[in-house]
Image 1: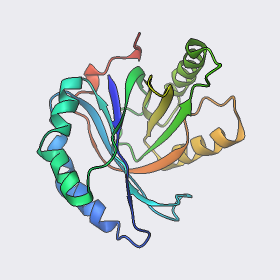
Image 2: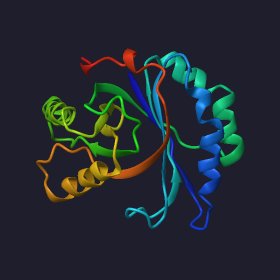
Image 3: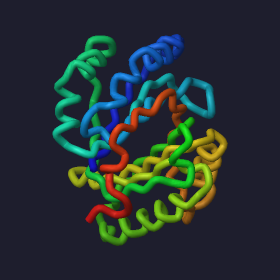
Length: 209
């Protein structure tokens, strides 16, 4: 499994209905993309739920690295480059993935947080603690999917969770800021406009090492 995201930050006065229409008319094109586990078409709007920016930020979990390459070099991503310029694409190696109790419901939000593994920390210990948090989260009502991945170049973890209801995502963000021991992988919160999920069964379940 590989996690991937690019974030396109838009002007403060940008009409986000343009993005909503874009996803409504084109989102289905990846519904059967071979090798894709899932793509969450995420947006956040300036002034809504504490967001400081207008942003289009889809998040991907890939079952096959070849499929990720095929997407980045194919017509779909060329359309992104043509309309918005070529964004920085972040990607992380998968460490953990599990569907939650709400996996059969359409997700309405996702939360995403990055965490740097301190230089003087034992990486295995930090990752084991993070996995334990996701194991607990995966049994929580309202969780559609939760995943953890690592960029070993920068020793950065990304915590990603899809939520069936926006209220759970909001609670996750609150819990993150009020308790360092909280298992909730909160951070930035995005509304999910569409989910393409042709290959979730191929993402694996549980830890991936």
